[in-house]
Image (cartoon, rainbow, N blue to C red; front, side, top):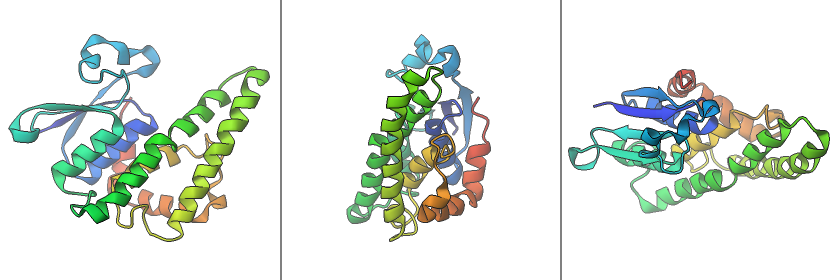
Length: 208
C-alpha cells in the first residue's frame, strides 16, 4: 500500500508530508509545479477539482478500494482516521483538534498567504495598504496562538493533526516578517516540533 501525494513545496504541501512521515505511512510524491500551472491539467483536476495542492490518492482506502482526497485539512483528517494517530477517538478530545485545525484553515493560512502576495509586489503603492492590513491580522493570529500555547503543550493539548496544519504556515514566519522571539510560546512549540524526526523528514521530503 502506497499513498501518492500530489504536492509542491508550499506550507499546505508540507502539512501533508509532515503528517505522512509522523504517521509512518509509505508514500510517493508527484510534484505539481504550480508556477507552471500544472494544477490546471485535466488529470490533476480529476483528483483535485479546486485546482489546489495538495491532494492524495490512497490505493488502500476504506473497504480496501482506492480513494482520492483533496484539501489539506481533509487530508489530515483522513490520515488521522485511517491510522488512529494524532486524532483522538473521544469526541471531547477531538473537538479542540477540530477547532484549531479550522482556525488554521480559516485564518492562519489565508492571512499570511496575503502577506506573501503583497510583499512580492514591486510597486510600493500597490504593496502598502494590503501589506499593512494582512500583516496586522497575521500578527494578531500569532498572538492568539501564543496565548493558547501558554496554556497547553500543543494546540489541542496532545500532539495532533492541528499542529501539523499550523506548523506548515508557521514555517514561513520569516516571510511573514514575524520574529518568533516575540511570541515565546509559539517559539517553544515550533522548536519542539522541529526536533521531531518525523517533522524533519516531512520538511526534507522533495516536493518540487
